[in-house]
Length: 283
Image 1 (tube, rainbow, N blue to C red):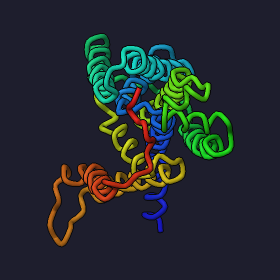
Image 2 (cartoon, helix red, strand yellow):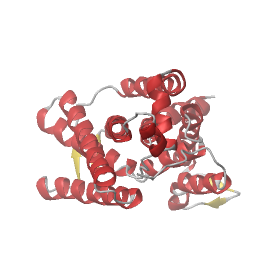
Image 3 (cartoon, helix red, strand yellow):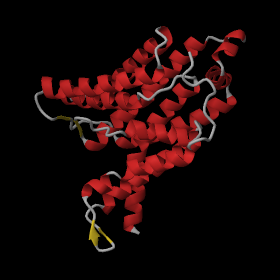
């Protein structure tokens, strides 16, 4: 019983950052902007949260800095894809590379160490509540409000939306800003869970959140279920490390690969199914 409760608790802890990032990705992609930059935004937010918290001793300042970093990267993504009409995937890859290199330079070059310790963080329970509220709000927003219907209309057909008097550019920019906010909170939560920042600490969680979003058909509640399932997979691999399987000792690296293997298998079964915005990635 204790093992089950520990597994469920770890699932919430490890799944909540995925939920926040997935909800941010949902807003962006429902507006038609493909967003593989969730990983970079979370990484930048985690780094700035830890660095600023440790420098100022103020957890609120750390959260503000982390969210600001993520929102700034969202603005870059909006500028590159919507103003310069660049490919959305290329832009996302560039942002991920920028975040990986920039955070490494900041921590190793400026602070001359492998990570940034920050003993002052906001309680992680606040992020859990925020993740749940974000899911419930998006369920209501996308199905019950004029703004949500307009958001999905832009994602399905920007040209027809313009004919109906909507401004796809404004809607997409606002969606990307909201995505930056949620991804930023996800990065802050990752740093808060760890109590510090280490180089590359997001470890592909942004991509897993995107996979959960795709598996959920770009809908809030199924995406939530996907994030918690991946969170449970990660919790399982932590619990199973050091145990024997059929009398054989499994290397730690094999257990570490379990969440990513589960992601690949899930996406394989999802291949060919619809559900995404019709004009995803189309300017």
